[in-house]
Length: 199
Ligand code: ZN
Image (cartoon, rainbow, N blue to C red; front, top):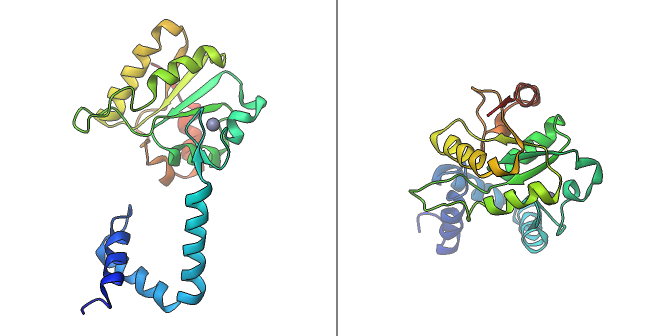
């Protein structure tokens, strides 16, 4: 057996499918864990089981945590009229780390893609439109990627929001956003947010 056992090979194969990992790093991680199987590996397995059990999406914004309504949506001080639309929860977390935005969020969970058959309903865009009136939103900030999909999604949302008579802005151009905010330093995120422009 080249890689220990069928079970170990299956674990490596599973691990290799994780974002940012491939077969090589998966093999190294699994080997390292097996060497620490009674300590680190057992703890990690228990922690993963707990998080799988307790984590859920906020029913309003799509943030991930443990509550049905996340702390941001539950905080009345965050209802300042600003709603920031992001593609991914990782972007929301990155903006929160930057501490520059004090409004609320709407997580799309992706961008429009004809190829992958992701339409407005899959991204919760109707839900976004209904939140505008429900929560007294005055400005929607589209923090989406500068890719074709990101910009197509931004235009679609801007059009869908037209009847709502809300100000629609986008982050400063040239800043990589959309699953990538995560890699920016806090200063860049703050600058992109401050330099947002009307769409
Ligand atoms: Zn929420």
